[in-house]
Image 1 (cartoon, rainbow, N blue to C red):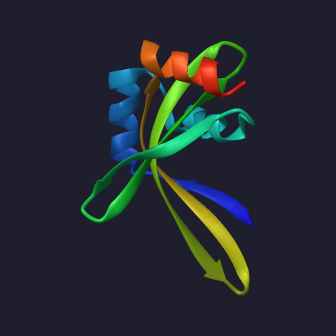
Image 2 (tube, rainbow, N blue to C red):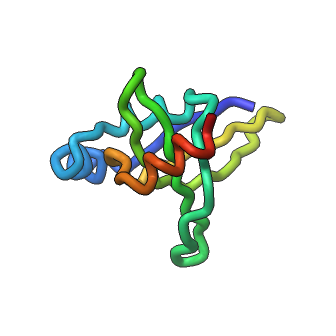
Length: 101
């Protein structure tokens, strides 16, 4: 299975201004083998997930996203739509440090 990321460009620009985290940087969280992903909420029937993970060697960020799968020509692609990304708050950092390692 391959993975593809998508997002709304206007939302990405707004997120960068507000939180200082680009969605391109947010993609890197999904490469963290210790990242934690859990259901955050259901909004209008869509499952919204939160993933907490490391970017680089010291920065822990939280990424809100929705996932879906598409099947094209017998190949399944996981599509992760990034909704927001920000520096993890202290409680999220503790959870990551306690559970991820």
